Image (cartoon, helix red, strand yellow):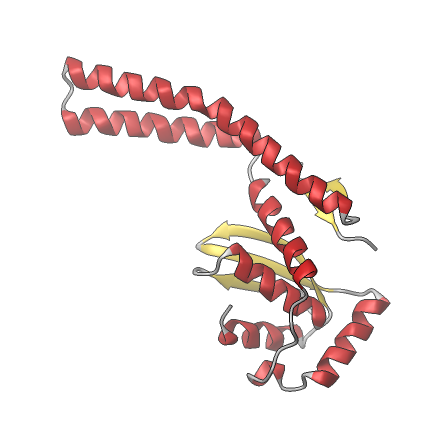
Length: 193
């Protein structure tokens, strides 16, 4: 998490409007750290998307305890937006945000979408192998075998992905988060009220 990213985020949050934090080089941990800092200044994590890096959405938290926390944080760290000291990030809050961000990224596509993307990618790979090696019998057999082996791994990867998402969901549920399905059919976890 760079100080420049934090300062820009904090300056954007002054308006009280939703804030988009984009970073092409950030890791999930760095995004979770930014979200944890934002929570201390009266915002809450809303969503994250992949694109050219990650694009995280933050919204103003209207709960009274969030407003009180933000007022205390601003009083203790008045020059945080100008490069001053930042409040420490609570390890538990950081881990929960990291879990939410990871789960949101893992549920970005449905199983059918992942199946289509993987199938298309594997087919393109097999065709590329044939094109690179020439369209003789040996390259067709090699490409066919590679294609068949990789296609057979797709269901295994989907099962592993479901188990991983269930493990993350269980961690959030144990922390008091509520599972909901958004209007796009995507499973999301909302923080306790």
